[in-house]
Length: 371
Image (cartoon, rainbow, N blue to C red; front, side, top):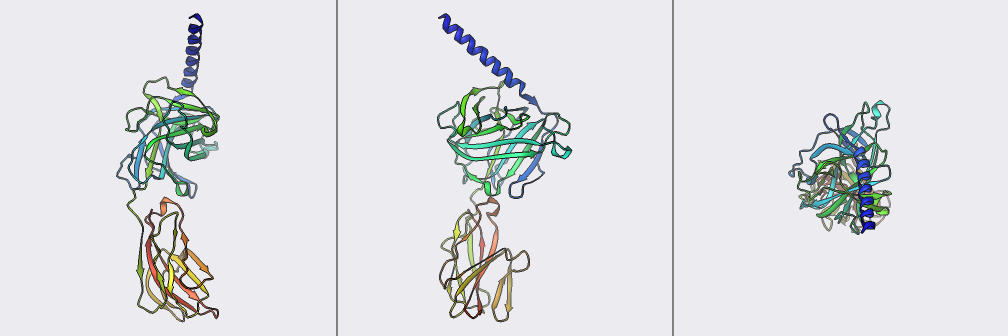
C-alpha cells in the first residue's frame, strides 16, 4: 500500500512538472491575427484575408477548427504535437487548400530575422490518446521556413492559407489527426477553444518524440493549464466535385480533312486523356502532332496547311506534342494533379505530316478539365 502511494505521488509530481513546462511554453498573442496566402506552386507569400469558414466556398470548407483562444503553444524542437477530430465535409476528399495558424516570437524576415518555421502533418484514422495506428496513414506533411514573424519580438499570431498546387491530397471523411512540429522553439500552433467548432475535438493532445510522429514514440496525452483550450488550428478546403470535365468537337468550316476524335472520357487532372486522329489529315502520314491552347479562335486559313482553329499568339500554344505514328493512335495527354486546373477551359487541334513535309490539320476539341 505504501509503495502504491509513493508511486502515485511520483506520478502526480511528474504531471505537475510536465504541466509547468507546458505552461512556460504557452503565450498569448498580442494584437489581431495577421492573414497571408502562400502559393506552393510559386513559393510566394501575399497578404490575405481571414476565412469566414463558410461551407459555400468552391472549393468548399470541409473542416474548420478555427475558433482561436488567443493563446499558442510552442512544441520543443523535434517534438510533434497531434490533435484529432472528425471530418464530415461530404465532398470529394481532394484537399486543395490547407490553412494553418501559428503564434511566434521569431523575428520577421523583413527586418533581417529568420522568420517563423513550422511543420504540419495530416493523418487519416487518428483516434487520439496514443492509439495504435494513429499516425500510420500520413496523408501529407509540409515544412515551412522563413514565414512571417514578429517585428519587435512580441508574440504575434498568423493565419496562413496554403494553396497546395501539386501537393494536394485525398483525405476521406471520418477520424483525422493533424500534428504541428517544433522547428525553431519559438513557433507553435494557435490553440482552439474545444467545442466551439463542430469538429469532434477534445481537450487533449498527443506528444510524439522525436518527430516525425510516424517514426517517433507517443510519450503521452496531455492538456494545457487552461480548461477547454486544448486543440490546434486547422482548416481544409476540398473540391466539391461539381466539374466532371467535358470535351466538345469544333469542326470549323470543313476545310480540314483530318478528324480529331474525342477521348474515351472527358479530361481530368492527374489522368491521361486520349484523343486520336481517326481520319488522316494527309494521305500518307508519318507524324502526328497536337497543340493545346487557352484560346479558341474563328477559323483562319493558313495557306498550304489548312484552317487554324486555336490561338497561337504567345503564350499559346501552351503545349505541343508530336509522335511518329500513323492515324488512330491516341495522344495520351497527361494533365497535372493540381486543384488549380479543375474547371480550366482549353482547346486543342491536331495535325499530321508526311515524309515530304506536307502538313494537314484536323478539327478542334474544346475541353474543360475535371476531377
